[in-house]
Length: 251
Image 1 (cartoon, helix red, strand yellow):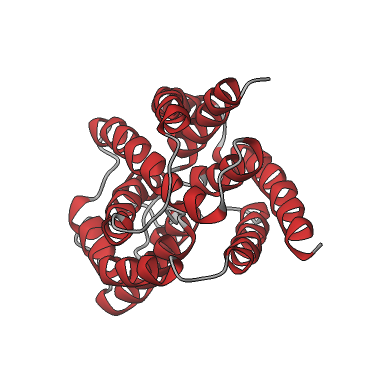
Image 2: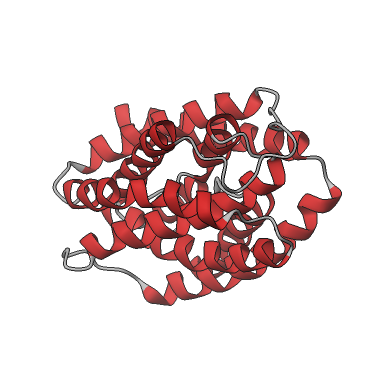
């Protein structure tokens, strides 16, 4: 199979995941870019941020039209992560590739384990103004750091954080997480723009195109398949990818 075909398939999977779960796509994008398309870890994390930003904006639009985005709370949550994302993005350009791979694999394993747990759907009726500033700022800063360092949007952590910290119901958490992902990814990309990383746009472009299309299909899929079932399927795939990356990094 050619690299172009692999990019198209990987993009579709990433888009489906982002559209259906409001996160997790970038956790698959990085290993796909490294092991399927031959990107270095540094180039893969930067390319992943570009892909996730474009795809998240598309998915955000779809969820916003359905009224599932809490703009006030989401903006406050995302704002706390802007500076940490920018600082971590700068630090990532100076870190050894093996360290980035190990850190990414460990994060992916933790995300997979978390996704196997039953989801708390939040307290019904939580409003857009129900924001706990201290906890929201702490969670937002942590997600921003993760985004900048590893090139992941942090949606797989943003959704449970929005549910537990801000008491969002599941649909609002998924939609609002896409706003957080977009802001964090843009902040991290701004710091990486001057880094000497070579990107293969002939593969990134098609990857983005199918990811955007997949995001729309993922939004429709989320309305037909239960959230817990989608999470379990994704967790199995993610765990397998993480274990492979960990084994590759230590051998």
